Amino acid sequence: MKHLFLALIAVVLISCNTKKKEEIATPKIDNETEIQKYIADNHLKAKRTESGLYYVIEEEGTGKQPDANSEVTVAYKGYFTNKEVFDQSDVKGISFPLQNVIPGWTEGIQLFKEGGKGILLIPSDLGYGPDGAGPIPGGSALIFDINLITVN
Image: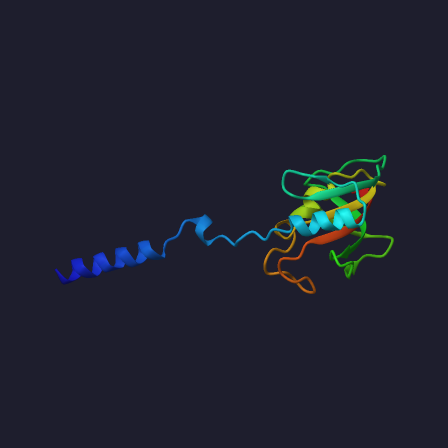
């Protein structure tokens, strides 16, 4: 009887501590209003993807268009909606596989062709999420000026 009682207690404790994945998922931070205000204040003609990424193609570009498995070379400047710069490359850019960057870049860079320039407006859930990284506080919407130099 004692063992049955302990087994019952263990089952109850385990079932109480087991939560569905969506119950323990990190809550989504909504940057929609912040990004739309930035777009309006800066008179941008941005398009929105289904994921919530906004983008502006300023120069179409004429070269290859990358896919999610491409390695690319990109010159960029990253800043917050208050225009405070947190990172930027030099004009030669940096090379990286699109699989190794934040989801907003993986999706957004694919919208450009080689030689293309524009802006990515990335909500937190496609960036560094609620925890942030380095100089980027959690929940931050991110803006990137992008120049896709090459698809390697």
